[in-house]
Image 1 (cartoon, rainbow, N blue to C red):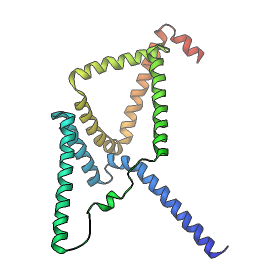
Image 2 (image 1 turned 60 degrees about the vertical axis):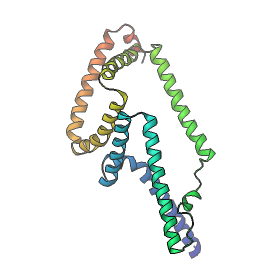
Image 3 (image 1 turned 90 degrees about the vertical axis):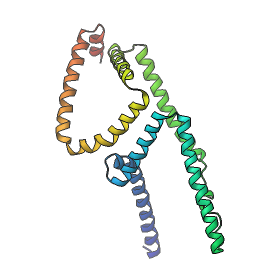
Image 4 (image 1 turned 90 degrees about the horizontal axis):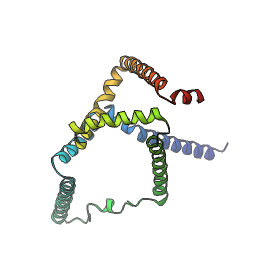
Length: 219
């Protein structure tokens, strides 16, 4: 094989491997954050998310968004004035400090937009079909499960509001994965035991419910 062709092939393979590794890293970024692979990044993300949720709990959404945008404007305006003064003192022609950012194309490609819309539409249609099946009682057992879950949520809603639930979910998101990773064997044993107990209870209820026996035989 020609040395030039082999070099081109190896470079293309290296580029493809780099793309694959970059894609893999991007897919694992959320997992790395919640597992605290990099404590600094995870701490920053967790702190900012908690700060945002606590701000929403204390103030309205409009106030929080306005304060965030105002803080961002204060930072950019101050930096712009600072760079202008430095350039005037040093008599340099560096130009606008955000020129590189302003020249970046921030528009969303039509293909990407259509792809995301199609994916979202498929999830929406699947959810509507599932809701229709549950509320029209296609399967009595599944509809009863949903009724029990909604009944439990009425008690949850009486104790917590939406922001409080989001704060608890954020705390659990950044605390449960590392704990589970350290105690995976013991936790899996308890989960299997609980799953077996739940399946046994559901099977007993299905035997007592009218029409459930016929459905199980048909399956």
